[in-house]
Structure formats: structure tokens, C-alpha cells
Image (cartoon, rainbow, N blue to C red; front, side):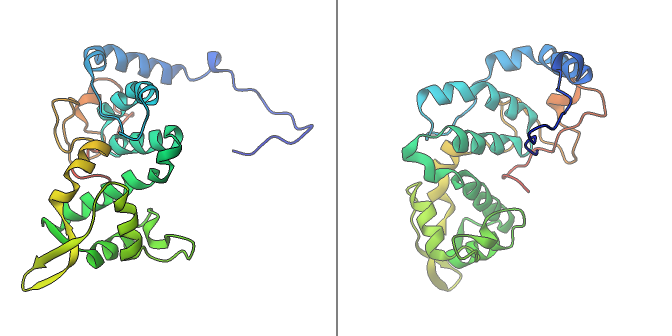
Amino acid sequence: MKRRQKGERVDRLRFRTRFDDLRRKCARFVADHADDIRTANPTTPEALNDRAADNWAPLSALADLAGGHWLETARQAALELSSDGESENLGTGPQLLADIRRVFHEEGTDRLRSQDVCDRLADMEGTPWPEWGKNRKPISKNQLAVKLADFGIKSRNVRIGYDVAKGYLLEDFTDAFHCYLSESGNSKRYNATASAEPGENAVFGNATPPTCSVSEISHFGPQ
């Protein structure tokens, strides 16, 4: 969006006379899933104060129903927009946790070297990790340690094969994943069903016409 210049005339956006189709789809979705929305009990980041958490709960519930990246995008947006001064440094924290969870899942292991985590993060396009910090270089082991320290996670000596190196165990992330990320996979709490292709989300399937689709639900964070 570009700010209007002085003297420039633009047509005003009249919501009452536009978006009839979008309003119809929203009303249909609410009607189809009124019970799910009414009984939803979504998680919200611990970093939010009580009022902010209450305000974000309805949007988090809708994000959980939408599935896909919305499960974690909504929480990250909540932290970016509504976290208090003590938690401002956690803005990119949830994304880091989601990306690390993805690495553990794709590697099929419960332990990773610190350098291996950094290397995998640096290869993720569309994330801040390939150009992190003031020097815009791939995230380093020290920078990773600083970010994870916000969640009480520290590196330790891990044995991988015959080698021992500084790294992380999947179990060290359990609390952080629970507090800052949505529950993975199928969840009774969110009433969402995983699908293999975009547009096949079961929750949205009856709410909108075939042309209105949502992203697939990812089992371990954004893909």
C-alpha cells in the first residue's frame, strides 16, 4: 500500500457495497462450525498478558480451524503485535521453534548438533536465518544459543554415533513447543484433520465453495 499524496483523489473503499461473496462465505463458515467455534479452547503464547491472550483467543481458534501455516502464523502475529515490553525479543522466537521442530522431524532423530541445526536453518528460504543479525550472515551457533536461551533451552553434549558434540535433544524443546506452538498433527482440541494437498482441509470442506481453499495442515510446522 502507498500513502495518498496531498491533492490526490482516490475512490473510498465502501465495505457495505463490496465483498458480498466474502461476507457470504464468512457467514456460511460460522454457521457450519458454530459449535466448534463456541467450544474452542486454543492455546495462546505465554508471553502475552492475560488481556492480550483473551483478545487473541478468538482469532487463534479460527486459525486452528484453518490449519496449515495459520496455526503458528497467528501466534507469531500475536507476539509481534501484542507482547509486552519484557517479551519483545520473542517476536521471531516462535518461528525459530517451528523451524527447529521441522528439522527434528525431517531428520527423524531426537538429537542434533548445534552446527547441523544452524546449517539447516540457513538453507530455509523465506526465513530470517540465512541473513541473521546486523551482519546479515547465516545464523551461528552462538546466535542460536542466545535465541533459545529466551525459552530456557541450552545446548549440551550429545552423542551421535561415536562422536560427542554440543547440540540439542528433542526433549529439551517439549515445554517450549507446548507453550508457543500449536499442537501438531490431528488434534481433538482443534478439530482439524490433516490432508495431503491444499484445499482438502476437512474443517473447511463444507464451509465454502470449491474455489475457496486453504493450505494443508503441516504436522511439524511450516514447510
